[in-house]
Amino acid sequence: MSEIRSVGVCGAGLMGNGIAQTCASAGLDVVLVELEQAPLDRGMSAIAKSLDKFVEKGKLSQTERAATAARIKASTDVADVKACDLVIEAIVENVEVKTALFRRLDEVLAPHAIICTNTSSLCVIELAAKTKRPDKVAGLHFFNPVPIMKLVEVVKTIATSQETVDALFAFSKKLGKEPILARDTPGFVVNRLLVPYLLYAIRLLEEGLASKEDIDNGMKLGCGYPMGPFELLDFVGLDTTYYIAEIMFDEFKDPMMAAPPLLKRMVLAGRLGRKSGKGFYDYA
Ligand code: CAA
Ligand code: NAD
Image (cartoon, rainbow, N blue to C red; front, side, top):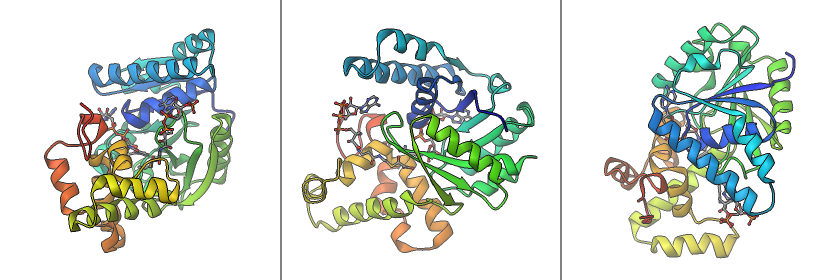
């Protein structure tokens, strides 16, 4: 296909707003879609805050900031993505909800358009098979915080065409990211390694090995990680981590991937991490 110029992003949560911002920063026209106005407003204000940070650091001028923000159109109607060359889905990690959205996107988009999922753990081919364009469906897995993290995993299913993969590699580079190619297995490269580590940290806390603060300090000071596992769990979202663990365990039946009881209970209690104001740590 010809160059990707306009991008639709579905979901304005943690990942969706970062993806929309990053695309707009690269000069692309963006349509950011949510189900309702309130989460859309929250997503747009997260983008404004992040752009302000770049201005404060002297990495963006006020003029560039205004031009970037103006490239993002916010909408609560998914049909508004109809003219986009690429749509990136970044909604809740649930196969039924994502499937319904993929069916709708397939209806509204032009035949040349590519549809990608930012899923952390679901089978991309399951979503692709619900469309009439499985060759134009792939995973495009960004990392949190999207405007900062350099990596993008491009996930090729057994049906994704090489043309689509090439277009997504070129697109990722245009965003200033470094793409790597991964096969369509839950967790791809990074989460296959990262998720068992995060879950194991929770098991160590359950076991009483050390306090969460000491475990976090251990990994930061001993290994140079920017965040300890509990800080990172709160950052990613405990609900999202729980869904990812369930999906990965379902596929691999590896006990390392099973959600520890404490994680499930924290999600049931509404302690979702930074996004809810409380997780392993308090953000009130
Ligand atoms: N927008 C703009 N700038 C931002 C930002 C944002 N959203 N978040 C951080 N920054 C900037 C800061 O302004 C700062 O800039 P300077 O270096 O110019 O000063 C820089 O990034 C570093 O930020 P801070 O000083 O505030 O804090 P920090 O040094 O602790 O860095 C961090 C923050 C980049 C998030 C760092 O803690 C980090 O890398 N954490 C680990 C993140 C990680 O592992 N992400 C992957 C999660 S897993 C995933 O995404 C996959 C999945 O499917 C679950
Ligand atoms: P989030 O809970 O912050 O945001 C999800 C958003 O999607 C919510 O605002 C919700 O209102 C919206 N939404 C739900 N259904 C929708 C629909 N049909 N149309 C439009 N919007 C809809 O979640 P998140 O952390 O941004 O995760 C989104 C996706 O990205 C998940 O698949 C997750 O696995 C993946 N992911 C997350 C991270 C992370 O660190 N949190 C990293 C990489 C990938």
